[in-house]
Amino acid sequence: MITVTAPAKVNLHLEVLGLRSDGFHELAMVMQSIDLADRLSFQNTADAQLSLTCDDATLGVGDDNLIIKAAQLLRDRSGFRELGASIYLEKRIPIGAGLAGGSSDGAAALVGLNALWGLGHSPAALERMAAELGSDMPFCVAGGCQLCFGRGEQLEAVPPTPQPLAVLLVKDPTVSVSTPWAYKRCREVNQSHYLADEAAFEKRRQALRSVNWLHPLRSDLPPPLRNDLQEVVAPETAAVRSALDLLKSVPHSLAVAMSGSGPSCFALFSDLVSCRQAQDQLTPQLERAGLKAWSCALRSDGVRIEE
Ligand code: C5P
Image (cartoon, rainbow, N blue to C red; front, side, top):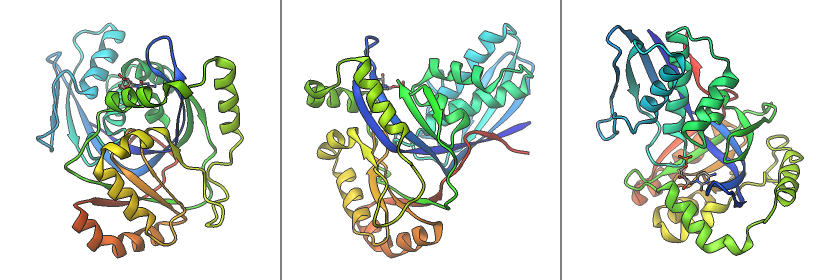
């Protein structure tokens, strides 16, 4: 049996540059893995079946699940139709939250089954397969902190931070946001300001490459968090507005933003201790607002096979 950890991510930056000819948005993002993770276990079966079970009954475990899609893609590419696996998912990352939980699970399936079936694909080959399945999936393979361009699949690593940064993550468990809806809304509101050509896109990419993303962080010089989807999701989603307001009220947080297409929001702290203190202080307000919270260290890796 093989067990794989699949961490969530937050967006330190999500900038919508323009529209692509394939209908997707051209993005410039900085994604960061965090220490909130699902766990997947893989067992070989001799029946050519791919089956998924999960400890969260609300999650679909059929052909739409990225874990099954990843397993099918990997098996198709291998040419060995008889390969089978029984997969168990321990779900800890909230679903539909803007934290890439489903993408990380899919990436974990590629990495775990590649090892279980002895296929010998390189991480780069697995990232290429991940890009066929979802925009956030390639990042999840290596994780850590990376610049993500194109649809999200063109990756450039950011060196790991020497600081023990942490995020206080907040989400209303009853609310989820549809990613296609968020991008559609963004297009309706902002298309007239979109950049028009590759030269303009590249100028923005170059500007992001020169930002010192995670070091040094000082309270008088907060990192430049930005999420263009926040502008269109927050006005339509009360749970995002109350999460952002609560996080902004916390002393000692360095910066506050929504992650991905929401509704999760987070505040960045210089260390896990001050992050946990802030969570403790906020507990009554969080409970009144119906928000769940997690204090998470940043991680310098993505999906990982456990020893
Ligand atoms: O690739 P993924 O499944 O993450 O994308 C979900 C949806 O989000 C897409 O179908 C598209 O509507 C939108 N999207 C986009 N531009 C991107 C990524 C996603 O418009 N770069």
